[in-house]
Each structure stands twice: as C-alpha cells, then as structure tokens.
Length: 98
Image 1: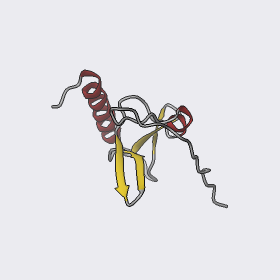
Image 2: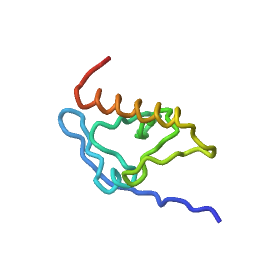
Image 3: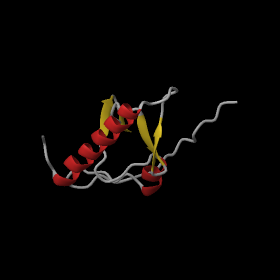
Image 4: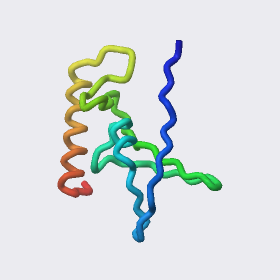
C-alpha cells in the first residue's frame, strides 16, 4: 500500500522587498534550513517553490544524511559526497562564489 504525504496549505505575506517567509511547519517537513536554495517556477496564476537539491546521492532526512538510491556506495563515492557537501556549506557560510 502506497503512503502519501498530506498536502500542507499555509499562508504567508510578501514584504516590501518581495520576500516570503516559508512557515516553520513546512520548513521542518521539507528539512529546509537557512542558506538552502529554492527553485521558483511561475505558470499562469501559480507559483511553485521547491528545494533545489543537488545531484548527490545523499539527502538529509531528519538531520541525517541518507543514501537515496538502491545500490551500495563505494568509499570513494561517500568521500566525494562528503567533500562536496562540506565545500557547498563553506561557500554558503563564507559567501564565496568560487
């Protein structure tokens, strides 16, 4: 039997700078944190926001990195993913564009 996440409908206000606060309940449900990238898509009268996830085989679930694929990772793949995520986090924290 398939398990589906419930649809969450919440309201937020656009401020003068065009910013929207994503409600805490939704940020927690999607494991979003300050500095995460969001994709914004507009179509007709709709706006869709979605987390911009990178191509790493790891995803963060409840604060823990979990492999999202079916196969076993080699130690090299694990080390590459860790290095990539550390570099991304360092770039976000330092504001580096390199």
